[in-house]
Length: 249
Image (cartoon, rainbow, N blue to C red):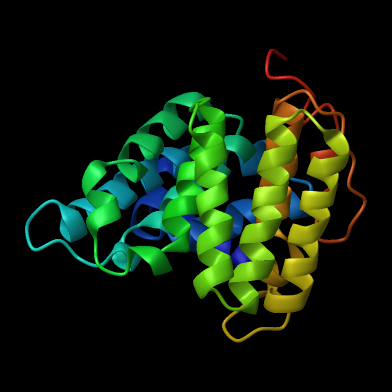
């Protein structure tokens, strides 16, 4: 981790400059630092990544969708938009502003007319996740659609990931800590079943269940005093000093 961090910082004037050319590697560094307990520095990387990933995803959006013919719904920067929300949550940044930007993109009218829309489950995930944060009144519909599409067209990987998300978001929506905890547990099961030891999965991806970690951060932000004791959740997420319960703190 130190080698990767130093490589990204080499010749750069600070973290903001370091994340520009290698945002994916920089996110790995941020998550790794969090796992190692270097929370303050991890948050600095996450905050820099939040700003850069919004630009990065926006450029990808423009390339895919700004001009006709628009590309497939599956080609969009949807996972980048999920990651930018993660970075805002874990960096304790301007989460509402980030989610608002992401939500506007995910709910553009033309998106539902794109080719392969029924297979682009990440669109529905982005709508659901950002929709919860911005309090979109259509949130229940977004989550219903996510589950329905996955049931109709998804594989085991899709089912395990997206139904766990749906369970977590429904728990947040209804203010049910048991349901949120069950959803986070399901995300941890997804991580253990589908990611650990997988092809192309690096040491940090193996060690940290990022989906579950980000959802725990969101639950704490929403005032839920949930503790998850699991090797794939960084200890800092259970520490009220670093990720306090309640957004006002």
